[in-house]
Image (cartoon, rainbow, N blue to C red; front, side, top):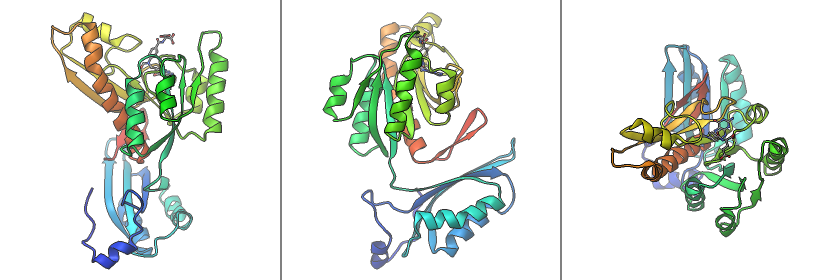
Amino acid sequence: MTAHPAPTPSRIQAAEPSESGKGGFILTIDCAESPGIVHAVSEFLLRRGCYIVDIKQFGDQLVRHFFMRVHFMAIEGMPTQEELRAGFAPVAEQWSMNWRLEPHSRKERILVMVSKFGHCLNDLLFRSRNGELPVEIVGVVSNHQTHQDLVDWYGIPFHHIPVTPETKPDAEAQLLDLVERYNVELVVLARYMQVLSDNLTSVLSGRAINIHHSFLPSFKGAKPYHQAYERGVKTVGATAHYVNSELDEGPIIAQQVIEVDHSYGPADLVAAGRDAECKALTNAVRWHAEGRIILSGNRTVVLR
Ligand SMILES: Nc1nc2c(c(=O)[nH]1)N[C@@H](CN(C=O)c1ccc(C(=O)N[C@@H](CCC(=O)O)C(=O)O)cc1)CN2
């Protein structure tokens, strides 16, 4: 985070502190590359007495497209979200921007899906509970009852939805009911081992993140560690990606790797990969919740 100008004590009080001590808003934009975009945004902020706390940008010269995320605050008299959105809309229209403006202190409402392996679910539950992740886990869905006790302990609703090829359409309809009922903003597949249908991935486009237990594009499918063992690789990893209709082909958000050697059997690779899976998924969920990710075709721009 870039430090903003050293304020006098009285000014600190005026700066709208939230419980995380950081207030203000996040503006995320992308548009065709052109001179003057940063000037237009900073002028908009200056006219409203706002100052920039952190700014990240990227101009992709191959596709001539510009991406930017700005965290801004005000010394005093912070405009409301509605005032900011109403004021920025004409600027965005002038530059044909895709844009999003959200409070810095907001928490993303997420629904976690899991099958039998619970290490990623456990990591998300703990990190969201201790405030490390700007998310609220509003529910957990599983096709097994393995982790019901853990989720009950956190006081979060647990939904057991068994899936067979025959029941998958109804199971997915139940999931979409929960997404609507809980006003879910992001679905996280934390080692959920059922392939989602084209219809479901279309409805959840850009708001469903999966953790795949390999360093994609290597070893797609349900048993990547066994494939890795058979291939004799010296590095294994994990990939967090947005889910689309093509299995393990969605836009990649975050990856982690772990060095291994000939002494690792399949079970050792599985164990070694757990930490990589948790870290890649936690990073992807955090960056999505913080408005740091912008899709660019089948790729992502992560402004961090
Ligand atoms: N539409 C998509 N759905 C899912 C994706 C995805 O990328 N697109 N990722 C998976 C997770 N996954 C790998 O990361 C994965 C899960 C399951 C399988 C698989 O072959 N499953 C079998 C059943 C396995 C079982 O019952 O244990 C199947 O569905 O027939 C491959 C990869 C989550 N969904």
